[in-house]
Image 1 (cartoon, helix red, strand yellow):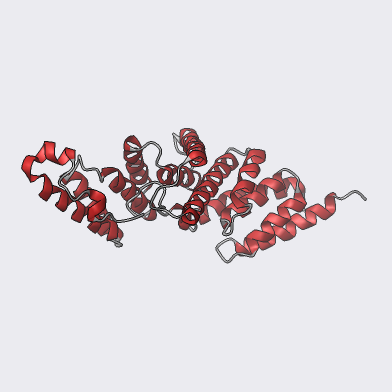
Image 2 (image 1 turned 90 degrees about the vertical axis):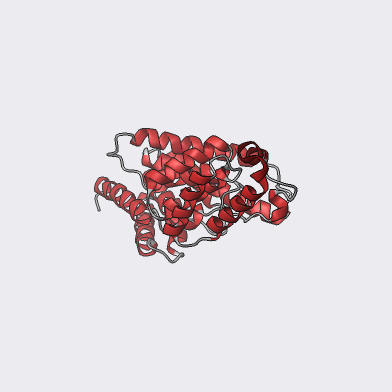
Length: 291
């Protein structure tokens, strides 16, 4: 096969594949114990305070603070436990309208972000992420989720496409910096914290790798995706596929074949394509050897 044609075909297939598989790896973006999102835990009475309403409640509702806090906690628990997306969205929006000053608002915003993401409603995902980050700019769950989503659903025809990629890059880099120095929450065991921290770090590097791939910066994309997949017990299949494409575009064919091979070992939407790409990369590696 003509190499120039093969490269053009490769680029097309990579973009098509990332669009096809963009939401097949939703496990990346689920809530974790790090950011305090509404999916991470449901507070008990001791966590929200047994001695009375919060300061916001007391200022806003006076002697009704105790009752309002109980109502808030009950409403937040109902939102957190809800699994039906439509009902969860309804409960979340009602909570925000009824308790705009609640200490749970940031967690509800983050929970709505996650729910809208599962519904492929990117506009609302980003809107509630922005709200959550106003209240907690260091929420690594929100930063990594949005940073990861943007390059997966990226459309170069959008008027703000370049700005969206820049936003994803900024969020992912911020998350990596925060994670590097994040203290362990007192309610998490060492192993739980290490696993959650590693998971989000892998996801942030995955986000950067996809951002650079979209910009056709294959060298930096490969570096980030190697960080996202190396030592990762469950590497993202798209990351391995795009890593193979990066290495192929860099004429590192043997390494590309290895990345595609790892991708082909995982069941998923890209398995057959990864196996085919691994064979093609091996053939290119053989052809490039000195004779």
